[in-house]
Image: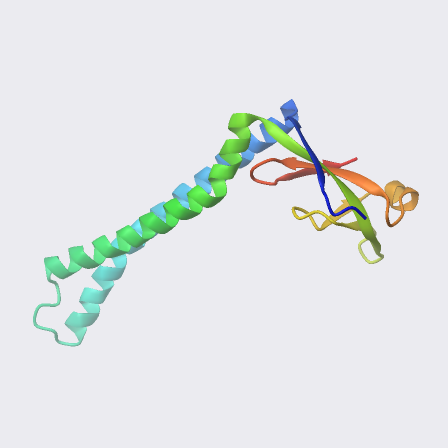
Length: 164
């Protein structure tokens, strides 16, 4: 088993690029929905807190200063956390779409495993990106431990496309 991984970069196929574009659009829409909900909660929580303080008999429960300070802090936390997760996760898919590349990595089969209940077959491989791959019955029968199999995935986001 070689410790040095063999990788090469190739252009994305049209269907792979389309898949990534749809994935990016779907995830971006989910981020907007989550951010809208967090913005709404950033104003509802301070309002509910004011009602709680009023119920406890606080003299200045509905203070606009307290409300807007609490809402501003919650809005900042919501904005920063949404932006950070967007930047960490979705940006990688956007880079794959921009550069239109995929990585092909030659890996070694470490172990074969069959799951009889679901009738699926897996190879455990020595890749840092993907530890197992589901394979067809024919490939499971044809290949043995120690054989090489190539996997392909998006270069930046590591979205798995397949094996050959």
